[in-house]
Image 1 (tube, one colour):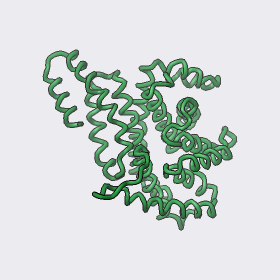
Image 2: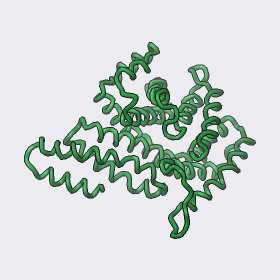
Image 3: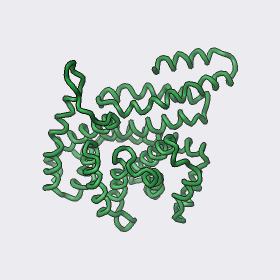
Image 4: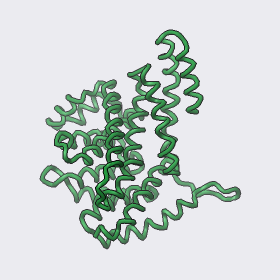
Length: 319
């Protein structure tokens, strides 16, 4: 698919006139964007790590000839935000838990999350959402009203891009707690996520609850953090979305470990271990029938397994 798109773009580039190039890209970009959900269906974390950068670079090449293309901006927002979290931050998690003085994976996470955020802002600008106006409306407590006036809650592209923009922003701020400008913007980042979750509470199979929990657990009570609410939301999400293994792993990482809940940590660990073993069996074998589970959870669960492994490897240092 990507090879075909690239060949079509090269052909269009050989034609004279920017309008012809833009017309060709206008036809190709929606097809490329509509294929992006396939990213979430990837079961193999290592394959996602290897294959995704080429797809993102292709989208960036196409964007040069059509800078305001919403499909490409949406794809790049989701792609870079997801890569920064799924790959780079997951690799950094082991170093963070082991308290290793290593910045390579953290630097890569910061770079890719920042790119996702930049493309997300560009997409929102195309919808009339101004970064400065968003900050100003947030101070007045009118963020959701402002976003409702600019975005379409029934538009899947608006929902997805806004969610991943907010996620990239929130994760970036959590990784750069030394940057007071970013730290001061955490509430604004969360308001983007909140807009999506208010309009579609079960978005991304419970990921709304997980990211809301991360926001409240990462934020001190004096600055509006609500750890009790975070725990309640995450526990409810684990019950409602038992096949989304990322939620309990996030719960371990952001609540059980920092709050030293060792008994509950062990209980969650015992429940998760066999589920990850079952994942290894979820491959096509002639004559066997795979269990029917949402394929949209594949990448979440692949990431969850990697993060779970990092946590277990460092378990002796955690409590």
